[in-house]
Image (cartoon, rainbow, N blue to C red; front, top):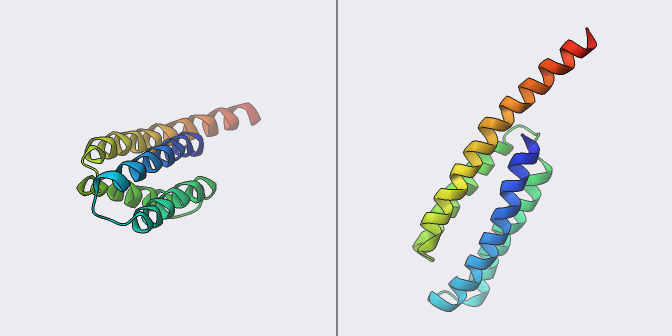
Length: 112
């Protein structure tokens, strides 16, 4: 699960960075505000990659997905991109857990 979720988060880092560039040019927000918010979100994505195995990390990832969708109020394309990445996050968590369970079963069978 960790690999799939981390891949999704790294993709989000790129999307958030590009959305920040768009927001700088199309919104009434100051450059500092745009990059403060975008920078924190990008940093959160990268840090979350390192702690995905800890309790609560997946829930923080879900909160990040909601924030990504809500950023569509500043950059309208983010409604669609946020929904796409939310779907990717769901798939990463759902299928990642299935892969982890299968690996655990195979390891148990191999050791017995």
